[in-house]
Length: 265
Length: 263
Image (cartoon, rainbow over the protein chains, first blue to last red):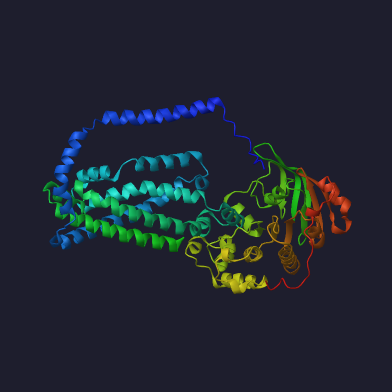
């Protein structure tokens, strides 16, 4: 029995040429960037073989005497992340409303809101931390500010997306029964967004714990300070202890956060 | 009393929503607006509580032209004109009770309502209205746990809690199955008769219009093409309104009376 095959899909020649051109461009770009980074593979292998046996085994034999001190600093790190992301979770609310077009009903205001948020988002936490260390001195407060500002941009954007996806029919129904703007906000909008807002805020806290482990490297408080000292004194077993604590704590927070978030939404 | 005087509405995209509509709806009437989708039924109903604003003519409610209303004047108009929607428009994550209490928002101060400080009278009223539509046992259920028919009953309770003089219902049964549709229409009719609330319902099912309406207004392309008591309406009238012969899907179909009230 002849198995009748459907006609082959026709692809126009222009499209074929376009595809090949794109593929070639991607490959060329890759070769070009790789070539211009100037990697001396001989040196890489030489250094790696020399240092590997010196560093890696020590990383895996953490200095347990440090444990107490490291955990203490890790707690400070979590505090920095917590205070920072809580501040961001609140600061981002007005910005989120400002950047949601169905709330403002004005293209201009929404655009301004989105601009503010992307401007804030453009700074990596570590750059913000360097700035704030200069402004408020090398204290955990600098770290808190860096986390707060850094997270506000991202949370504000996520909040505005949540707001843009709410059921506007409910808002219409409340408008139709004579409710005013604030009443619509509290009774029609908030019940729809609170679970998502909370969920994003908790997720952001999780991200911020990771982000704040490194902030101490530039003097903004937390466990990063210890990383800096361990690295500059080439004390790899201290480093091993620090990494161990970070990995354990971050994993626990990851699991807890995703458990809580699953329950909320 | 609602009076449409040469009322027209042209949407910004040029669509003619209403065209020289002249209609008077008396207090206590149960009016059903019929017409194909796009005929202007929704525009007609939404003009009355100014969810859309007509561009020409006059629209008098209790002898006052409402077309210029803004701010608190508009809100106070909306407190006396309740509305029921095709998709119920409840806050799905809130409890049934909270949804019904939302009907009081227009009568409650901003500060009190933000902190959920509804008066004892308001709560009693909300509960009593839930009882009227036989859904009081779902008081603390989340709205999204209810079936479509139950949700529409909650939205009727919400509208009653608003204590309106007029009820507008925009395709209230279009998302429901036949038995539930009849149940919802029966509640609307009962409220109209017991409380004397003027009720205007959009429907596209001919048999339901005939069964529940006192008066039928037929619309086509934004114009009122028929207006008269149900007794004057025949199949030909509908064919005229729809501009084509009647089909199976213009009918909702009827069901036996029992079995549905205790859903």
